[in-house]
Image 1 (cartoon, rainbow, N blue to C red):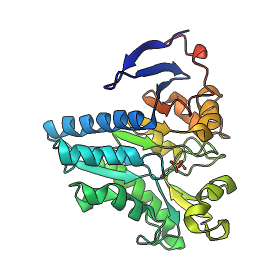
Image 2 (image 1 turned 45 degrees about the horizontal axis):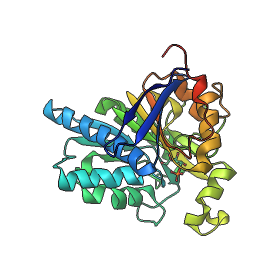
Image 3 (image 1 turned 90 degrees about the horizontal axis):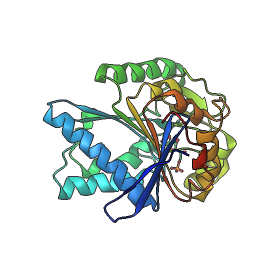
Image 4 (image 1 turned 30 degrees about the vertical axis):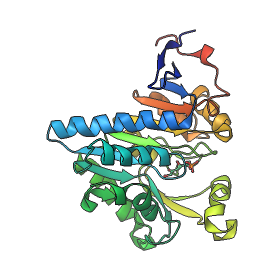
Length: 278
Ligand code: F6R
């Protein structure tokens, strides 16, 4: 069994970590500590790039999982001088169609949860546009890909995971080489989103999402998952074989992926099956 030596965090809590199928798994007792650890890594990357006079390109996620990371980045901005002036962001996805000012829009989510509270330039923010007309979506998605490449590629991509194993909105059946495109959401994903839309029938069927291939081009990937309800899909994603039926398994081959979990989300993992080569 090759569990790496246990680290301590600032509160002297144990962080257990091991590698399986090329994925570094880090397990914290609490989601708050896991979130603060990822926020600290992001802040360090932003500062390092600023010291080098460079921009830091972040891929961002929405949903309940990254909220505490954003809260900690806001605290670091207010209390510890973290500037986001050199940060360029690309969000993973947006419902389609979706007006930016609608209650459920990811534009609104990102403004409320992060952008309105830090010094990022509005010109540096990119979120898939849910108002593009259907006849222009393909062209628009290619432009989104091009914008990521023009910015120099994503330094660090933050991910959550859906109960279907989706990353972004790449549902089961997505191809490893897929790029930004219009996709149909699974019923499980729509059911999970229905509370935000006031019922399943009002929940969008479609979304624009970065592809699996887009995500895999990122230099670092940090996937967060918290809570017992994520434990089964986390287990399949880390310990299962690579398969389009669980798109998160495509992360196995990337080379710089960490799953940052609380103990509830990690509860079905078996550290004794860690990779021998790590
Ligand atoms: C959101 C996204 C999705 C979510 C996933 C988990 O931008 O891309 O993959 O990360 O559905 O959502 P939560 O965090 O609400 O459980």
